[in-house]
Image 1 (cartoon, rainbow, N blue to C red):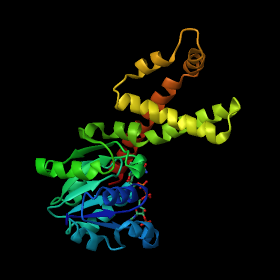
Image 2 (image 1 turned 30 degrees about the vertical axis):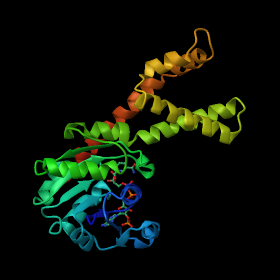
Image 3 (image 1 turned 60 degrees about the horizontal axis):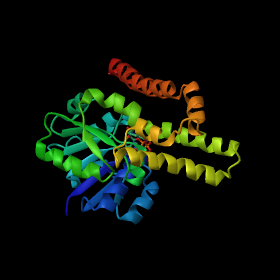
Image 4 (image 1 turned 45 degrees about the vertical axis):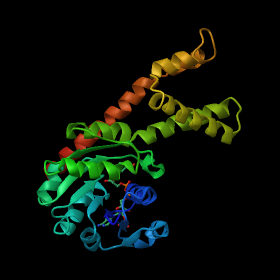
Length: 269
Ligand SMILES: NC(=O)c1ccc[n+]([C@@H]2O[C@H](COP(=O)([O-])OP(=O)(O)OC[C@H]3O[C@@H](n4cnc5c(N)ncnc54)[C@H](OP(=O)(O)O)[C@@H]3O)[C@@H](O)[C@H]2O)c1
Protein backbone atom coordinates (compact mmCIF):
# COMPACT_ATOMS: atom_id res chain seq x y z
CA UNK A 1 0.00 0.00 0.00
CA UNK A 2 1.31 3.46 -0.80
CA UNK A 3 -0.74 5.37 1.80
CA UNK A 4 1.24 7.60 4.13
CA UNK A 5 0.57 8.39 7.80
CA UNK A 6 2.25 11.22 9.70
CA UNK A 7 2.45 10.92 13.49
CA UNK A 8 3.03 14.39 14.93
CA UNK A 9 4.49 14.09 18.44
CA UNK A 10 6.07 10.63 18.47
CA UNK A 11 6.50 10.30 22.25
CA UNK A 12 5.08 7.43 24.32
CA UNK A 13 1.71 7.05 22.57
CA UNK A 14 2.78 8.47 19.19
CA UNK A 15 5.85 6.22 19.18
CA UNK A 16 3.66 3.21 19.96
CA UNK A 17 1.35 4.14 17.07
CA UNK A 18 4.32 4.40 14.68
CA UNK A 19 5.58 0.97 15.76
CA UNK A 20 2.14 -0.65 15.48
CA UNK A 21 1.48 0.85 12.03
CA UNK A 22 4.87 -0.33 10.78
CA UNK A 23 4.50 -3.79 12.29
CA UNK A 24 0.97 -4.32 10.96
CA UNK A 25 1.81 -3.07 7.48
CA UNK A 26 -1.47 -1.09 7.57
CA UNK A 27 0.11 1.67 5.46
CA UNK A 28 3.09 1.98 3.15
CA UNK A 29 4.84 4.99 4.75
CA UNK A 30 4.97 6.28 8.31
CA UNK A 31 6.55 9.65 9.13
CA UNK A 32 7.29 10.39 12.80
CA UNK A 33 7.85 13.93 14.08
CA UNK A 34 9.01 15.56 17.29
CA UNK A 35 11.32 18.48 18.10
CA UNK A 36 14.09 16.33 19.60
CA UNK A 37 14.52 14.27 16.45
CA UNK A 38 17.58 12.42 17.82
CA UNK A 39 15.10 10.46 19.96
CA UNK A 40 13.43 9.06 16.84
CA UNK A 41 16.38 6.86 15.86
CA UNK A 42 14.82 3.61 17.09
CA UNK A 43 11.71 4.33 14.98
CA UNK A 44 13.89 4.95 11.94
CA UNK A 45 15.53 1.58 12.54
CA UNK A 46 12.06 0.01 12.31
CA UNK A 47 11.38 1.67 8.95
CA UNK A 48 9.83 5.04 9.84
CA UNK A 49 10.88 8.29 8.21
CA UNK A 50 11.46 11.07 10.70
CA UNK A 51 11.60 14.85 10.71
CA UNK A 52 11.23 17.88 12.95
CA UNK A 53 9.15 19.54 10.23
CA UNK A 54 5.45 19.02 11.03
CA UNK A 55 4.33 20.96 7.97
CA UNK A 56 6.27 18.74 5.56
CA UNK A 57 5.07 15.58 7.33
CA UNK A 58 1.41 16.68 7.22
CA UNK A 59 1.75 17.63 3.54
CA UNK A 60 3.19 14.22 2.61
CA UNK A 61 0.58 12.30 4.59
CA UNK A 62 -2.85 11.00 3.63
CA UNK A 63 -3.78 10.71 7.32
CA UNK A 64 -2.33 12.63 10.27
CA UNK A 65 -2.14 11.54 13.92
CA UNK A 66 -1.68 14.29 16.51
CA UNK A 67 -0.10 12.82 19.67
CA UNK A 68 1.21 15.89 21.52
CA UNK A 69 0.10 16.88 25.04
CA UNK A 70 -3.32 18.59 25.16
CA UNK A 71 -1.71 22.01 25.81
CA UNK A 72 0.35 21.70 22.59
CA UNK A 73 -2.52 20.64 20.31
CA UNK A 74 -3.63 24.17 19.36
CA UNK A 75 -0.12 25.29 18.35
CA UNK A 76 0.58 22.17 16.29
CA UNK A 77 -2.79 22.34 14.58
CA UNK A 78 -2.34 26.00 13.62
CA UNK A 79 1.05 25.07 12.16
CA UNK A 80 -0.33 22.29 9.91
CA UNK A 81 -3.81 23.75 9.27
CA UNK A 82 -3.32 24.31 5.53
CA UNK A 83 -1.74 20.89 4.97
CA UNK A 84 -4.58 18.95 6.65
CA UNK A 85 -7.46 20.60 4.75
CA UNK A 86 -9.75 17.80 3.51
CA UNK A 87 -7.71 15.12 5.37
CA UNK A 88 -8.51 12.82 8.28
CA UNK A 89 -6.78 13.98 11.47
CA UNK A 90 -6.77 11.56 14.40
CA UNK A 91 -5.86 12.97 17.81
CA UNK A 92 -4.99 11.02 20.94
CA UNK A 93 -5.09 14.08 23.21
CA UNK A 94 -7.12 13.71 26.40
CA UNK A 95 -9.70 16.33 27.37
CA UNK A 96 -9.66 18.27 24.06
CA UNK A 97 -13.18 18.34 22.51
CA UNK A 98 -13.92 17.86 18.80
CA UNK A 99 -15.35 21.38 18.56
CA UNK A 100 -11.92 22.80 19.44
CA UNK A 101 -10.24 21.04 16.51
CA UNK A 102 -12.94 22.24 14.12
CA UNK A 103 -12.55 25.81 15.35
CA UNK A 104 -8.82 25.82 14.53
CA UNK A 105 -8.87 23.86 11.26
CA UNK A 106 -12.44 23.85 9.90
CA UNK A 107 -11.50 22.20 6.60
CA UNK A 108 -10.10 19.01 8.14
CA UNK A 109 -12.02 15.95 9.36
CA UNK A 110 -11.34 15.11 13.00
CA UNK A 111 -11.36 11.94 15.06
CA UNK A 112 -10.80 12.12 18.81
CA UNK A 113 -9.42 8.95 20.36
CA UNK A 114 -8.50 7.59 23.76
CA UNK A 115 -5.99 4.72 23.53
CA UNK A 116 -3.88 3.45 26.40
CA UNK A 117 -0.23 2.63 26.87
CA UNK A 118 -0.82 -1.06 26.09
CA UNK A 119 -0.57 0.18 22.48
CA UNK A 120 3.15 -0.47 23.03
CA UNK A 121 2.35 -4.20 22.77
CA UNK A 122 -0.61 -3.87 20.37
CA UNK A 123 -3.16 -4.39 23.18
CA UNK A 124 -4.69 -0.94 23.61
CA UNK A 125 -8.42 -0.52 23.84
CA UNK A 126 -9.03 2.63 21.80
CA UNK A 127 -12.32 4.50 21.99
CA UNK A 128 -12.96 7.03 19.24
CA UNK A 129 -15.54 9.62 18.25
CA UNK A 130 -15.81 11.57 15.01
CA UNK A 131 -16.93 15.02 13.94
CA UNK A 132 -19.76 15.42 11.42
CA UNK A 133 -17.36 15.69 8.43
CA UNK A 134 -16.09 12.12 8.89
CA UNK A 135 -17.84 9.84 6.37
CA UNK A 136 -18.68 6.13 6.81
CA UNK A 137 -15.81 5.41 4.41
CA UNK A 138 -13.43 7.50 6.56
CA UNK A 139 -14.56 5.50 9.59
CA UNK A 140 -13.44 2.29 7.88
CA UNK A 141 -9.99 3.87 7.45
CA UNK A 142 -9.98 4.99 11.10
CA UNK A 143 -10.84 1.47 12.28
CA UNK A 144 -8.13 -0.02 10.06
CA UNK A 145 -5.48 2.34 11.43
CA UNK A 146 -6.54 2.09 15.09
CA UNK A 147 -6.82 -1.71 14.90
CA UNK A 148 -3.04 -1.83 14.48
CA UNK A 149 -2.89 -0.89 18.20
CA UNK A 150 -5.53 -3.35 19.41
CA UNK A 151 -9.34 -3.37 19.51
CA UNK A 152 -11.19 -0.10 18.92
CA UNK A 153 -14.77 1.05 19.26
CA UNK A 154 -16.71 4.17 18.27
CA UNK A 155 -18.39 5.86 21.23
CA UNK A 156 -20.34 9.08 21.78
CA UNK A 157 -18.11 12.01 22.67
CA UNK A 158 -19.88 12.40 26.02
CA UNK A 159 -18.20 9.16 27.17
CA UNK A 160 -14.63 10.23 26.40
CA UNK A 161 -13.79 11.61 29.88
CA UNK A 162 -15.05 8.43 31.53
CA UNK A 163 -13.08 6.27 29.07
CA UNK A 164 -10.02 8.39 29.88
CA UNK A 165 -10.50 7.81 33.63
CA UNK A 166 -11.18 4.08 33.15
CA UNK A 167 -9.18 2.58 30.30
CA UNK A 168 -6.81 5.47 29.44
CA UNK A 169 -5.52 5.44 33.02
CA UNK A 170 -6.38 1.74 33.49
CA UNK A 171 -2.86 0.34 32.97
CA UNK A 172 -1.70 2.45 35.95
CA UNK A 173 -4.38 0.97 38.20
CA UNK A 174 -3.68 -2.58 37.08
CA UNK A 175 0.07 -2.02 37.47
CA UNK A 176 -0.58 -1.04 41.11
CA UNK A 177 -2.63 -4.20 41.61
CA UNK A 178 0.14 -6.35 40.10
CA UNK A 179 2.78 -4.56 42.17
CA UNK A 180 0.72 -5.07 45.33
CA UNK A 181 0.24 -8.76 44.50
CA UNK A 182 3.97 -9.07 43.89
CA UNK A 183 4.67 -7.61 47.35
CA UNK A 184 2.08 -9.96 48.81
CA UNK A 185 4.07 -12.81 47.25
CA UNK A 186 7.22 -11.51 48.94
CA UNK A 187 5.32 -11.36 52.23
CA UNK A 188 4.54 -15.08 52.02
CA UNK A 189 8.11 -15.91 51.03
CA UNK A 190 8.15 -16.19 47.21
CA UNK A 191 11.26 -15.13 45.28
CA UNK A 192 10.72 -11.67 43.70
CA UNK A 193 10.74 -12.75 40.03
CA UNK A 194 8.39 -15.64 40.67
CA UNK A 195 6.05 -13.36 42.64
CA UNK A 196 5.97 -10.77 39.84
CA UNK A 197 5.59 -13.27 37.02
CA UNK A 198 2.80 -15.24 38.69
CA UNK A 199 0.92 -12.02 39.58
CA UNK A 200 1.13 -10.54 36.07
CA UNK A 201 0.21 -13.86 34.45
CA UNK A 202 -2.82 -14.18 36.78
CA UNK A 203 -4.03 -10.76 35.54
CA UNK A 204 -3.38 -11.63 31.88
CA UNK A 205 -5.06 -15.04 32.18
CA UNK A 206 -8.11 -13.63 33.98
CA UNK A 207 -8.53 -10.94 31.31
CA UNK A 208 -8.43 -13.65 28.64
CA UNK A 209 -11.08 -15.71 30.47
CA UNK A 210 -13.33 -12.64 30.41
CA UNK A 211 -12.57 -11.48 26.86
CA UNK A 212 -12.00 -14.76 25.02
CA UNK A 213 -14.17 -17.24 26.98
CA UNK A 214 -16.76 -14.55 27.81
CA UNK A 215 -16.89 -15.63 31.47
CA UNK A 216 -18.26 -13.08 33.91
CA UNK A 217 -16.10 -11.85 36.80
CA UNK A 218 -18.45 -13.54 39.26
CA UNK A 219 -18.32 -16.85 37.35
CA UNK A 220 -14.52 -16.79 37.62
CA UNK A 221 -14.75 -16.05 41.36
CA UNK A 222 -17.15 -18.99 41.82
CA UNK A 223 -14.78 -21.30 39.92
CA UNK A 224 -11.90 -20.39 42.23
CA UNK A 225 -13.68 -20.16 45.56
CA UNK A 226 -14.28 -23.42 47.43
CA UNK A 227 -16.55 -23.12 50.48
CA UNK A 228 -14.33 -22.94 53.56
CA UNK A 229 -11.27 -23.00 51.29
CA UNK A 230 -8.23 -20.77 50.86
CA UNK A 231 -9.52 -18.22 48.31
CA UNK A 232 -12.45 -17.11 50.47
CA UNK A 233 -9.95 -16.15 53.18
CA UNK A 234 -8.22 -13.84 50.68
CA UNK A 235 -11.50 -12.45 49.30
CA UNK A 236 -12.67 -11.65 52.83
CA UNK A 237 -9.57 -9.50 53.38
CA UNK A 238 -9.93 -7.77 50.02
CA UNK A 239 -13.59 -6.89 50.62
CA UNK A 240 -12.69 -5.67 54.10
CA UNK A 241 -10.00 -3.48 52.47
CA UNK A 242 -12.69 -1.93 50.23
CA UNK A 243 -10.81 -2.65 47.00
CA UNK A 244 -13.95 -2.08 44.88
CA UNK A 245 -14.68 1.31 46.43
CA UNK A 246 -11.05 2.34 46.01
CA UNK A 247 -11.16 1.54 42.28
CA UNK A 248 -14.50 3.29 41.82
CA UNK A 249 -13.11 6.38 43.55
CA UNK A 250 -9.98 6.27 41.37
CA UNK A 251 -11.94 6.19 38.11
CA UNK A 252 -14.41 8.83 39.32
CA UNK A 253 -11.59 11.18 40.39
CA UNK A 254 -9.72 10.79 37.08
CA UNK A 255 -12.93 11.37 35.10
CA UNK A 256 -13.80 14.49 37.10
CA UNK A 257 -10.27 15.81 36.63
CA UNK A 258 -10.78 15.77 32.83
CA UNK A 259 -13.87 17.96 33.19
CA UNK A 260 -12.12 20.32 35.64
CA UNK A 261 -9.11 20.80 33.36
CA UNK A 262 -11.38 21.48 30.39
CA UNK A 263 -13.46 23.96 32.42
CA UNK A 264 -10.33 25.95 33.39
CA UNK A 265 -9.02 25.71 29.84
CA UNK A 266 -12.34 26.96 28.36
CA UNK A 267 -12.23 29.95 30.72
CA UNK A 268 -8.68 30.80 29.63
CA UNK A 269 -9.52 30.73 25.89
N1 LIG B 1 0.58 8.25 27.99
C1 LIG B 1 -0.62 7.68 28.00
O1 LIG B 1 -0.84 6.67 28.66
C2 LIG B 1 -1.75 8.27 27.18
C3 LIG B 1 -2.92 7.52 27.03
C4 LIG B 1 -3.93 8.04 26.24
C5 LIG B 1 -3.82 9.27 25.64
N2 LIG B 1 -2.67 9.99 25.83
C6 LIG B 1 -2.59 11.30 25.17
O2 LIG B 1 -1.64 11.21 24.13
C7 LIG B 1 -0.93 12.44 24.02
C8 LIG B 1 0.56 12.16 24.13
O3 LIG B 1 0.83 11.64 25.40
P1 LIG B 1 2.24 10.95 25.70
O4 LIG B 1 2.11 10.33 27.02
O5 LIG B 1 2.64 10.13 24.52
O6 LIG B 1 3.15 12.25 25.81
P2 LIG B 1 4.71 12.39 25.45
O7 LIG B 1 5.42 11.11 25.66
O8 LIG B 1 5.19 13.62 26.16
O9 LIG B 1 4.67 12.67 23.89
C9 LIG B 1 4.36 13.92 23.34
C10 LIG B 1 5.41 14.19 22.28
O10 LIG B 1 5.06 15.37 21.60
C11 LIG B 1 6.29 15.94 21.14
N3 LIG B 1 6.03 17.34 20.81
C12 LIG B 1 5.74 18.37 21.64
N4 LIG B 1 5.57 19.50 20.95
C13 LIG B 1 5.74 19.18 19.63
C14 LIG B 1 5.69 19.91 18.42
N5 LIG B 1 5.44 21.22 18.40
N6 LIG B 1 5.91 19.24 17.27
C15 LIG B 1 6.17 17.91 17.24
N7 LIG B 1 6.24 17.16 18.37
C16 LIG B 1 6.02 17.80 19.55
C17 LIG B 1 7.25 15.74 22.31
O11 LIG B 1 8.60 15.59 21.86
P3 LIG B 1 9.60 16.85 21.73
O12 LIG B 1 9.64 17.52 23.06
O13 LIG B 1 10.89 16.23 21.30
O14 LIG B 1 9.00 17.71 20.66
C18 LIG B 1 6.81 14.40 22.87
O15 LIG B 1 7.63 13.34 22.40
C19 LIG B 1 -1.44 13.37 25.13
O16 LIG B 1 -2.29 14.33 24.57
C20 LIG B 1 -2.17 12.46 26.08
O17 LIG B 1 -3.32 13.08 26.63
C21 LIG B 1 -1.62 9.52 26.57
